[in-house]
Image (cartoon, rainbow, N blue to C red; front, side, top):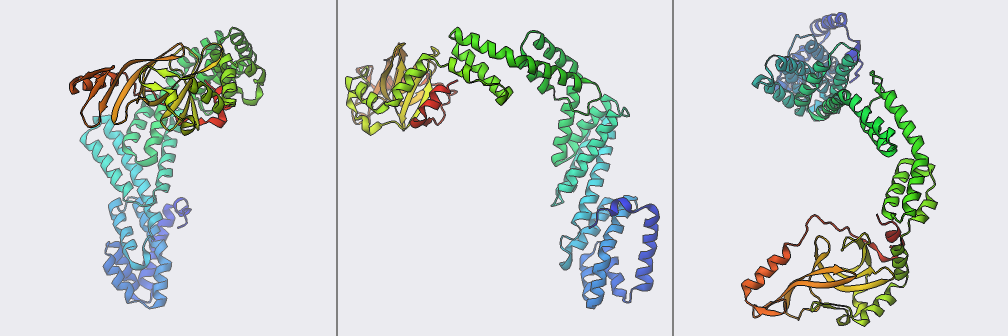
Length: 491
């Protein structure tokens, strides 16, 4: 269907077209059955139209096909002029589609008419909301729109037409022909009544409208940040204001200028600030600023010299340890690193648990992370004692807790038992706080080294479980081969 018809057909052309229809159907068409096809379609009777079509010669069937587009266009214009309502038009168009040779023919006509009807109902809903609020009638309008919208299979055109309609309303507000309260109310109604993308579009404009009222407040906040030399915060506030270029209040230019001033000032200010923090051994603070510089300025600011300043001693030590990880693990494990009666590094063959992934996690919350070198759920935990990297233990990690605790499945537990241990890290050494072993056949229960009954053992299990922190999430880690990236990229 040529959509230009919707914009080129005038009232005069409608009258001419109607006369032409009469002329065609009454005087020109050689077969009465052609007229019968279109009469049946106007009645919404596809079966009758199909029967009339079957009586036609091939030549006259072709004539019907030639006229069908004009017939559908005429009916849509009848609807547009109020001569027929949407339900009647829907019935006619559906009847065309129900004919064997015309399935899907009316889709574009249908979407055009549906968009116009939805807009008409939205205006009625706005009037009802003004008069009586969101009444039962209001929600009936909403239901009507939903029924019309979802009765159409291809809704892209409808979505675009409804969004253009919303834009026209918003343009009226910008032009001063609608007040702020009126446009706010209309967008509220549209967000309720309009379907699909248009509803979200109206919601977006509602948010934009609400921001306009806050522009001055947000600008004052941004300017205060700028005066306090908090340039990153200034830039963020300006960006979050999200004033459109079409803004007529003048705030678009004000925010743009303030952001540029903060952007220019921050280039030198934050480089110096990162240097000062690094020289004061506040590596974490310096790294945070460097990351922000990269995020805001990208390649405009060279951070290579700054990054060289924020390599903490533990990073170098860990990197050196990982360079010869296998040798270091075997050497330290052979010396025997015990965690109470629950774990003993001499009881394992290191080759069987050679790590393939690594994590950095600050178990004791002292600002320096430990290295978890893992093979499945098994982990060698290496810490930094202020001078060198040391193996603090070999564990089967069960779940994480708040610092400085960890729940493990003891690796030194006797065969045929299940159990858990709560261990605590302090000064690169793990100690056992609580543990229990339970024989799988129920014959024996041990809590903290003493044999107990089932209830006592079960109570111990519940006690250990209370230390679990389900909010702590550990990602999938990185391969040990990438240790430099993990260590030097720690945040």
